[in-house]
Image (cartoon, rainbow, N blue to C red):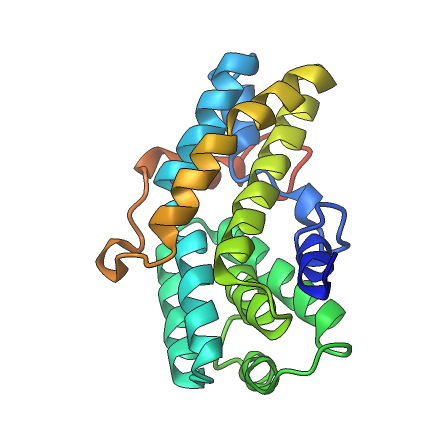
Amino acid sequence: MNNALLSLLHLTDPTLPIGGFSHSAGLETYVQNGIIKNGATAKEFITEMLTRNLQYTDAAVVSLAYDAAVANDIEKILELDVECTAVKLPLEMRQASNKLGIRLMKIFQPIYKSAIADQYKEAMQTQSAMGHYCIVFGIYAQALGISKEDALHGFYYNAAVGFVTNSVKLIPLGQQDGQQILFSLQSLIQDLVKNTLEPDKNLIGLCCTGFDIRSMQHEKLYSRLYMS
């Protein structure tokens, strides 16, 4: 076992205290509207989120932020920050990305020194950058010596675990049902990682409009368990 593997497990740990458990990415709206109501519809939601949302937004930005960190290109990081903010149309999704990014930075920055992470933090403090989770993730994956391919595997898996956990709580599903969904996503995650190693920059922001609409509707739900 090497340090890179342990670092990957640490960076992608679903129990990392950054507040990821409190965000549903609009899933709560789908459940309250009766659209997602069992294991089959939960799997469909998670599959669509991974393939038609994350692949062209956060996961693509992780990949590009990793490359920018390799090149020590803070200007590219700041460009990605602006672009990431622009493609997150729902307010609560932007806020969630910002909060997760700040908390992830607070955990790793005091322990693992990275010049470009320090520059990004300074931009966040001066409000010249919003500070997105996916960018911080990409920066620290590179700083920790994790390969980009492994980092993307971890990023997609972490997202899938979050969606499954939320589905189990909200629908609700049995724990075994949730684990079966995770098992079924393994080959999909492999394919998504291959697609995201060299993302098409022209496709960043490509997303199903329905996800954005449900996230916006979540802001107005009468009762809710999740922050987004």
